[in-house]
Image (cartoon, rainbow, N blue to C red; front, side):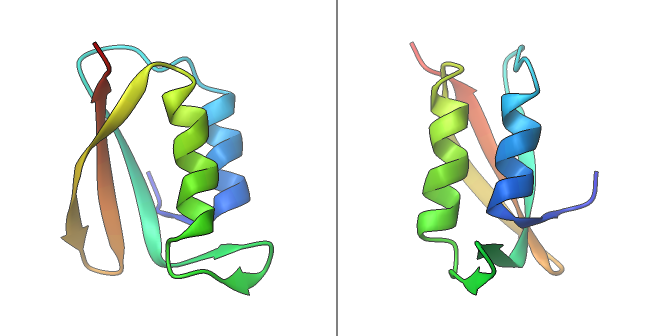
Length: 77
Protein backbone atom coordinates (compact mmCIF):
# COMPACT_ATOMS: atom_id res chain seq x y z
CA UNK A 1 0.00 0.00 0.00
CA UNK A 2 1.28 3.45 -0.90
CA UNK A 3 1.55 6.00 1.93
CA UNK A 4 -1.37 8.40 2.18
CA UNK A 5 -0.44 12.00 1.37
CA UNK A 6 -3.60 13.65 2.68
CA UNK A 7 -5.67 13.27 5.81
CA UNK A 8 -8.82 13.25 3.73
CA UNK A 9 -7.64 10.26 1.66
CA UNK A 10 -6.47 8.33 4.73
CA UNK A 11 -9.74 8.97 6.57
CA UNK A 12 -11.83 7.97 3.55
CA UNK A 13 -9.87 4.71 3.35
CA UNK A 14 -10.41 3.97 7.06
CA UNK A 15 -14.12 4.88 6.97
CA UNK A 16 -14.66 2.56 4.00
CA UNK A 17 -12.84 -0.31 5.69
CA UNK A 18 -14.00 -2.77 8.32
CA UNK A 19 -10.94 -3.08 10.54
CA UNK A 20 -10.57 -6.57 11.97
CA UNK A 21 -7.87 -8.73 13.48
CA UNK A 22 -5.15 -8.29 16.08
CA UNK A 23 -3.62 -5.20 14.46
CA UNK A 24 -4.01 -2.59 11.73
CA UNK A 25 -1.27 -0.61 9.96
CA UNK A 26 -1.59 2.64 8.05
CA UNK A 27 1.25 4.25 6.04
CA UNK A 28 1.27 8.06 6.24
CA UNK A 29 3.61 10.17 4.10
CA UNK A 30 6.02 12.45 5.95
CA UNK A 31 4.49 15.46 4.19
CA UNK A 32 0.85 14.64 5.07
CA UNK A 33 -1.41 17.59 4.38
CA UNK A 34 -4.81 18.58 5.68
CA UNK A 35 -7.05 20.67 3.45
CA UNK A 36 -4.01 21.53 1.32
CA UNK A 37 -2.17 23.15 4.25
CA UNK A 38 1.06 21.76 5.67
CA UNK A 39 0.09 20.13 8.96
CA UNK A 40 3.17 18.27 10.22
CA UNK A 41 0.97 15.36 11.42
CA UNK A 42 -1.07 17.30 14.03
CA UNK A 43 -4.72 17.99 13.17
CA UNK A 44 -4.61 15.82 10.06
CA UNK A 45 -3.68 12.72 12.04
CA UNK A 46 -6.32 13.50 14.67
CA UNK A 47 -8.86 13.54 11.83
CA UNK A 48 -7.66 10.06 10.73
CA UNK A 49 -7.25 8.54 14.20
CA UNK A 50 -10.79 9.59 15.11
CA UNK A 51 -12.08 7.24 12.39
CA UNK A 52 -9.82 4.44 13.65
CA UNK A 53 -10.96 4.92 17.26
CA UNK A 54 -14.58 4.72 16.07
CA UNK A 55 -13.81 1.16 14.95
CA UNK A 56 -12.45 0.19 18.37
CA UNK A 57 -8.72 0.40 17.60
CA UNK A 58 -6.12 2.59 19.28
CA UNK A 59 -2.52 3.67 18.61
CA UNK A 60 0.33 1.21 19.15
CA UNK A 61 3.33 3.19 17.92
CA UNK A 62 4.89 3.71 14.53
CA UNK A 63 7.96 2.84 12.52
CA UNK A 64 9.78 5.54 10.55
CA UNK A 65 10.52 4.43 7.00
CA UNK A 66 11.93 6.18 3.95
CA UNK A 67 9.48 9.03 3.30
CA UNK A 68 6.66 7.82 5.54
CA UNK A 69 5.66 6.46 8.92
CA UNK A 70 3.91 3.13 9.32
CA UNK A 71 1.42 3.65 12.16
CA UNK A 72 0.20 0.59 14.07
CA UNK A 73 -3.16 0.21 15.82
CA UNK A 74 -4.53 -2.56 18.07
CA UNK A 75 -7.99 -3.32 19.42
CA UNK A 76 -9.01 -1.33 22.49
CA UNK A 77 -10.09 -3.50 25.41
